[in-house]
Image (cartoon, rainbow, N blue to C red; front, side, top):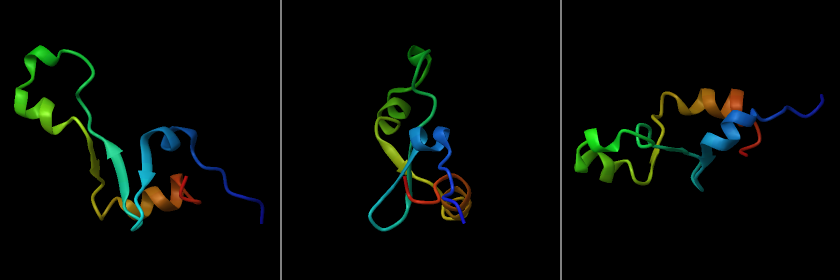
Length: 67
């Protein structure tokens, strides 16, 4: 079997934690920030863990080798 390719878009958006969970950036923080509350901007500052239901499909289809 040849190697599977990692999706280039997924390489830029997701990364795996040491325990195998998928970490991603928070959305809605690029522009029009004056209309968003301080709480929303503060909570969107870092990253978050993808839901357990979505993790297997991301790892299987987009990150086969844990890029």
